[in-house]
Length: 97
Length: 192
Image (cartoon, rainbow over all chains, first blue to last red; front, side, top):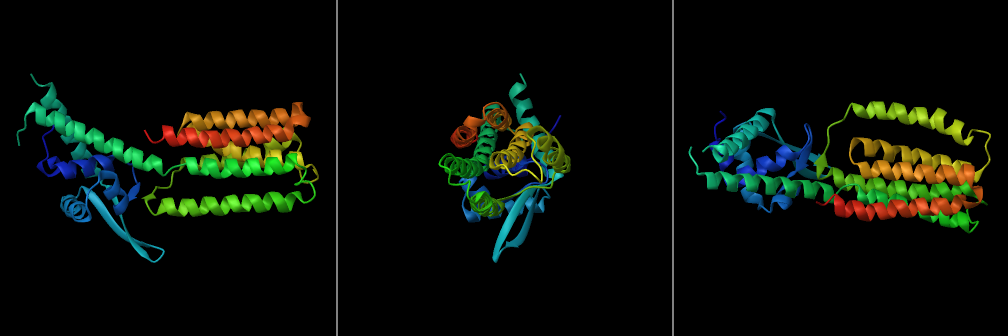
């Protein structure tokens, strides 16, 4: 049975992982786009992304679009697996007698 | 770590809310704008055709107006690319092959369009049919509504050109209106 992941279970990180796992494989989303979509602040999103990146769950890539630096985010395969396991563990808790 | 069933239910509902918010954000910046751009251009050309304002210099008028559409589409695409980056899809190659087949063999054969054709209606129908192929392909890949738009407009164009030539330009006008109306429908549907 899958176990709960304490890194993912924190509410903001749970939101971030759920949103990034919605993307198709290989797609990336801009930092500001994710921030606006989830109604998080720059600092809050940045801090939680650092935690998830250090665990290998998300990839943070910085590049220039025109002259402006942009940060693109995506979920890694281990991150997707960990999130899926976490969701299964939550469902198991609900379905257990 | 241990949590209660109530906390698990709360976490699952937060996950679902987050997924919905993300999907809504992605879709709100999606394709309805292209439908509006090209529907408007389509109607503009058809309206000018109805008023006999295209016939004198068809290439200049149609290419200029389509050029505006291309500039607007590229500009909007650049704005979208700042927010999302999509991975190259290998199916795209298959789609390109099918587009070339229809562009060079199928449609020229069906509507009698070729290098020696000097018919504004056939030229315009040809370019519109090519665009409708894109909608059909997009409909197969992403959303049935685009498939139906592609099929309906293809039928309108072919009927106007081959069966009721006198109604060709009104048929084109109706086709543009279908695109614009689909843009409004798509904005509502793709936001949920």
